[in-house]
Length: 103
Image 1 (cartoon, rainbow, N blue to C red):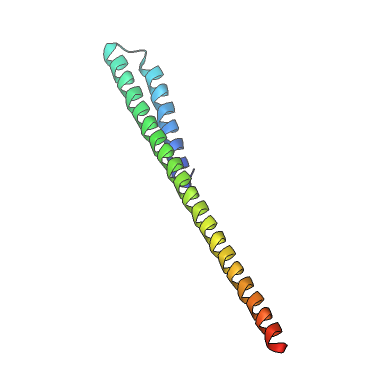
Image 2: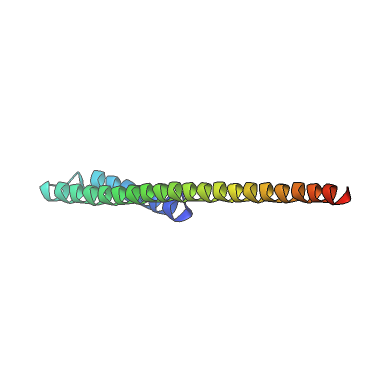
């Protein structure tokens, strides 16, 4: 989770805490206060849901990038292996040529 995602999650949690406190504080009033409190809680929950979606997207993106990096590393390792085999073949051919030329 990146610093921005953590900050958003913490902000959403803070908003939810404020909303709950506000709901409890306004609970002493009539129906209007209860409606307002419920609206604040709903808005806070929406923000929490949005923050969770952003976190989920960031996790998915990080996973995709991780797989891409792993694929690139495997491709690079295969390329190095092929180059090493080619160099070995050339070295063996040079040794063979030297032995045949020396006789």
